[in-house]
Length: 98
Image (cartoon, rainbow, N blue to C red; front, side, top):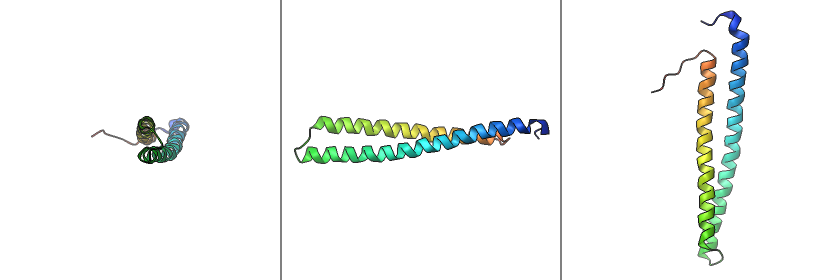
């Protein structure tokens, strides 16, 4: 059990980690929109190439940008999980890696 004298500090720490969760979720949402935009750009580059209006380099460039955004989104998803674990632990909860 946590001594009563530590509660103000516990609340401060929990607020910090809670804010981290919220910020990570906001970044993830923005990255989700970004990935959708890059998917559209990639699909458009493929269509233009098939119709003879674009070059293959555009397909490669847009695909690389899409993959970069997807990797960033995946990393942010991991940050959300870590922030949630930190919040739970700061509130006195336990977490045991499997």
